[in-house]
Figure 1 (cartoon, helix red, strand yellow):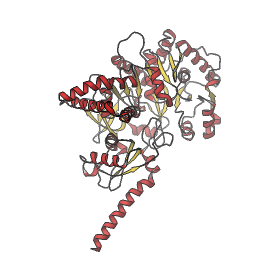
Figure 2 (cartoon, rainbow, N blue to C red):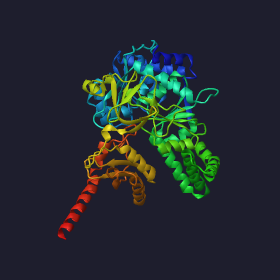
Figure 3 (cartoon, one colour):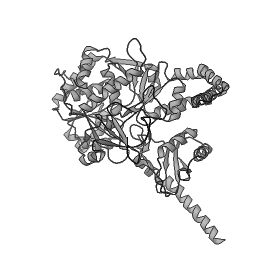
Figure 4 (cartoon, helix red, strand yellow):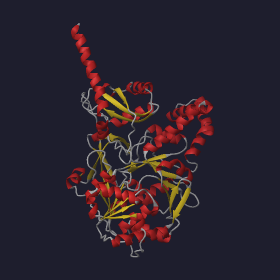
Length: 559
C-alpha cells in the first residue's frame, strides 16, 4: 500500500487526527479529515474538467494553506505529477521552471499570482490556469485515488539554483514510501508521551522536499498540524500555536538566539550579569572543568533567566528540528543550555529531503546526524559525500546528461564536503564553493564565515571572497561597528594559517534576501550572484591593495 493510500485512509477513518489548522495571528481555523476529503474531491473535479490525465504535470503556486495541501493531494490522486513552486519567487524565475515542466494545469493561490505568471511566461496560453477559488468551487469528484506504481513520478521539485539554471528533481512513489516510515519512527522516539496529539507548528514552504516530507509524515502518523499563514507574524503565530516541536532552517534559530541576546543586553543590569555568567558556567560544564562558582552561576541562571527565555520561545517546546543547512555548534549548544534540544537533519532534494538525522542519544552539536537505515554513504578523496539508497531520486526532468553526472554507479554525488566521525556527519561546505586564492590553497568558506559571525556583534550575514585574489576579504551585512568587525577578524585570524586569514572587510547596507536574489528561497547564499552584485566594492578593496603595493615598491625603488 502506497503512502497516498495510507493518507487517504487516515483522512477517512481518523478525521480528528488528520486535522490541518491554519494559524491566523491569534486565531486557529481547522479543517478535519472529512473536510480535507471534500476539498480534494472538489479540486479533482476541476482537474478532471481541465483534462488532466495520468503523467501530466500539475503545478501549484500558492503560499502554505489547507487548500495548498488539498490541491497537491488532488493532483497526485488524479495520477498527475505535482510541480510545487515558491509563491514568493520572481515571476521571471518561475517562468523558467514552468517552461521546463510544461504543466497541463497551474493551480494558483490568487488572481495576483496567476497574473504575474501569465505576464512573464510565454507558455501560459498553452496551460490551464485555475485560481484556488475556482479550483474548489466545483462538484466533488468521487472516484477513488489512483494508486501510483512504485516507479511512478510523484513530484518534480526544482532545485533552488544557487548557481546555474535550476533542475527539476523527479521523486517517485518508492522514494516517498521509503522515507515517511523513517521520519515517523524518528519523531516517535523523541516526542514525550502525552494524552492526545502532539502540537506541531509548520512555517516552511511546502514546495520544498523536506517541508513536504514533514507534512506527509504527520498525515501518515497521523497527527494534526498547525500551518503558518504569515511569515511576518511568525512570533505571534508560534505563541498562538504553543507547539511541542517544529521544523526550522538555521537562519531562524540564529535570529532567535541573537534577538534574545540583544534584548537582554539592552535591558542590562542583573539580568545581563546572570545571563553572561550562566553561559560561561554552561560552557565550562560542557568542557568538563567547571568550578564551584561556575556551577553555582549556571544553576542560578537556569532558575532565574533561562526558564523565562524558554517560556518566551515556546512554553510547550520539547525539541526543535533544524534542516536545510548545518546549524552552528554555538547556537545548538545555546538551545540545549535552555533545555530545548535541537535535532539536526541533513539532505538534499535529490535524496528525498533526508540523508541523516540526529539520534537522540548520539547528538553532537555542530554535526548533522547518522545516516538513516537503508542509506549508504562514503567519501571521495576530496571529501565529497556520496550517497546510495532507496531515497535517491530517479533523475532530473529531461536532463539526462546532468543525471548521469550526478549519479555514477548508483552513487549520488552530493557536492558537499563532509567529515565523518563515529558515523556522525559534519558538513564543511560545498565542494564548488571552495575558494582558491593566489596562494593555491583550497579554502572552504563556510566554517570561517560561521566563526566570524560568532565573534562579530551586530553582524547578520557574512560571505568570504578572494578566489584568485591575493588574500581573503569578507562582505558583512547588519549594523556592526568597524571596531567590532576588526576585533572579530583579529580573534579568528589568530589561529588561522596565513592563507586563511581575512585581511579586509566590506560592510554593506543591503542584506542578502530572496527578494533581491542574493539568497535562494530556502535561505542559502547565492555566492556567484553576491560576487557580481557587490563587484564594485570587492574590486575597490583589491585595487586599493594593489595601489598600496605599487606605492611601496615605488618608494623603495626611489631610496
